[in-house]
Image 1 (cartoon, protein in one colour):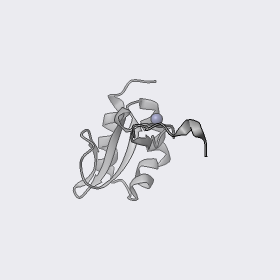
Image 2 (cartoon, helix red, strand yellow; image 1 turned 90 degrees about the horizontal axis):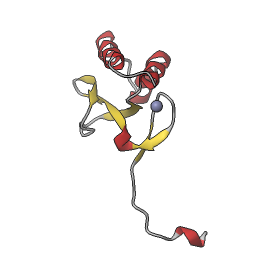
Image 3 (cartoon, rainbow, N blue to C red; image 1 turned 90 degrees about the vertical axis):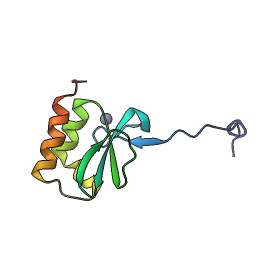
Image 4 (tube, protein in one colour; image 1 turned 45 degrees about the vertical axis):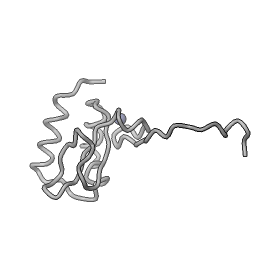
Length: 96
Ligand SMILES: [Zn+2]
């Protein structure tokens, strides 16, 4: 046990970006959710369902889409429509 470590710490939720695998504060990542209506982007982060997180960076989305990381994280297979929605979002993002 380290003595330096007993200060009360604020708990900041951390999530892993499924594109670059970096861990960041949840609020810096965008959530993708597998909702009952299908896979979609969840800007509020409040929809029920299994979620996956990505930086708002084109490179992370490209990697995740190319490697099938989104479907794997959500334990589903993306339909062509869902892939199209996610690809369209990726196209709006800046290169990093
Ligand atoms: Zn990332």
